[in-house]
Length: 65
Image 1 (tube, rainbow, N blue to C red):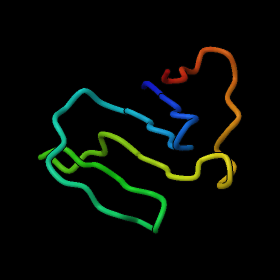
Image 2: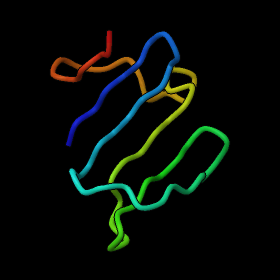
Image 3: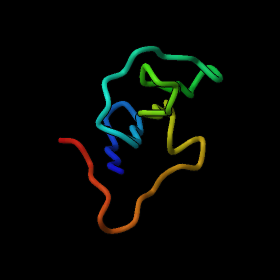
């Protein structure tokens, strides 16, 4: 699993797999779930991550420049 936070846009990406993304489904206005061809979850993208309570992060998480 890999997490990347983009502070300038307040976007959190949580990558669960290296499989290619086949489709994206919006679960709410600020949460998108990306799926592989086999139906497994590949990535979660959360907009307004701080406002939604998903940040700040602990040591070991990455921030994008």
